[in-house]
Amino acid sequence: MEIVICPTASEAGKLGAAAIAALLQRQPEAVLGLATGSSPLHIYDELAARCQAGEVSFAQAKGFSLDEYVGLPSDHPETYHNVIRRDFVHRVDFDDSGVHGPDGLAADIPAFCASYEEAIAATGGVDLQILGIGTDGHIGFNEPGSSLASRTRIKTLTKQTRIDNARFFGGDIDQVPTHCITQGLGTIMAARHVVLVASGTAKAEAVHQLAEGPVSALWPATILQHHPHVTVLLDEAAAGRLQLTGYYRETYASKPAWQGL
Ligand code: F6R
Image 1: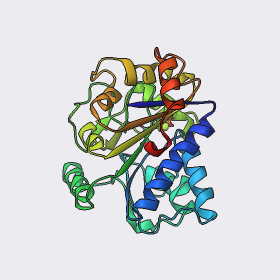
Image 2: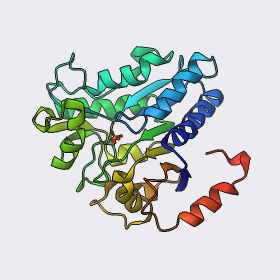
Image 3: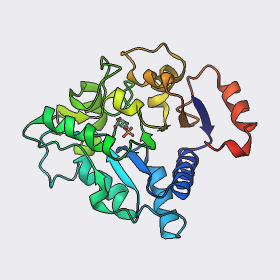
Image 4: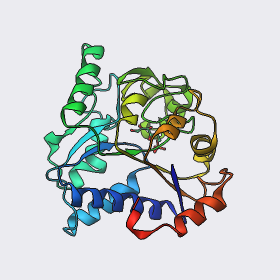
């Protein structure tokens, strides 16, 4: 796991965007795993700017969202289907029909989840998965206690996650759905490269556990310690509880340029 500590969240986002642009340069039809929420916004801003400048194209790429709330009407502005389009997909030259997400209104949720796994596999799998991390250590919406081998399924959101996300629902936790469909930890682990981005002191403990804690269902993101290619992009605040910061900084500063992220 590579830990990169950046002066600001914006710098972290620029590095993440550069990794995605480099991937699309080598492989224009790459499959991207897409996260919603605040964490990836700097990545999406930078990619939108690069796309407008003609430096990167998503025209042949595909995307799979990590998760979706269960039960929100399709015209609700906070469905992740709508959020990812507003924050990213419609700001670049992505073909809308090439961007998929869990169906939070599926009549048969287990059947839908199985079909989502099949759809990801049918594309050849995710080349680069963008992730945020919850204050409780979730990735996707794999809350504490999630099976470390889980696949796409329905989950109950923790109260902490609903409190954290109430800001998108007028500050009213009662408006935040109680359930979601999320790619599982096993699904996320199948991505070839994972780029996790985190900023702010609220994420510092989860980031410490992710990189330096024991692998445990209590901090689901710790499963990424078993992944061969994870890049963690942090601002100073999110790095605030890491123990080996000196080593991470030295390693990144002396990294051979040819390695990329
Ligand atoms: C969103 C997702 C979540 C978020 C996490 C952090 O698709 O899967 O894991 O990445 O809740 O959210 P933010 O970035 O809003 O702090």
